Length: 322
Image: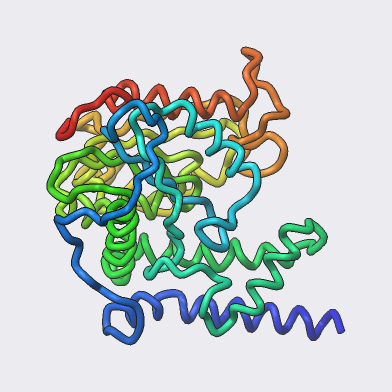
């Protein structure tokens, strides 16, 4: 029985690896999804601003880590952290309805061939009784991060995600061409997808794009050319975020002309340690139970880093076109 289960899991993993770029290619070929253009006319709907006393001067789009199943089915620790963040960004609209591991913004439990399987794994993940089985969600999403970073398929994938981000922004009242600044906040694999989407998002919106990566695994993506500034926050005990610097030759110091190293030379990348944090487990970036040496909870330290970056960029009191 165990051997049969392991065989099934291996087959599923191989199928997922094979299909990883297919969704992007299928979307590009028009087999599914829509590629409608963004409009300069805002939708007629009520917009919820984090600070109701202030106009929306800045939009902050959250791209979850590889544990996400849909845009609203993410680990509870992230939800609690985002609730706290919402109270600290006056004048900002926090956009939470983008699932970064799908070129069409369709969650794993929606209309997909393996939707029943993903729903089952979601229940195991929520019950915390599934052992290593829910890790298949992470593996599937890691493959999408790899597609985003791939020089062959990445541009198509990142274009699709950029379109979905643009649509989500408009659904929250964003006006194309207004110049209102947008920040992409990517956790883990969301960091790579954020800089990948920036390739197309800046010319789509005609607005400055910043990226904040928390424990981000990132390549030397060409999207860095369109990023006003990248803030890379990491934990000293987080080996996962360091994989980007090892796996992608364009991030090696010898690749002087890569987009990453050019951005470094232009001082458009700021890297900062948040202390002895880990990528997963009780000592992660979103933990309220473990304290840093200065007495702050790890989650609080991460909040301070993010809001500090926004403040340095002038985005908590920004004007359109900043």
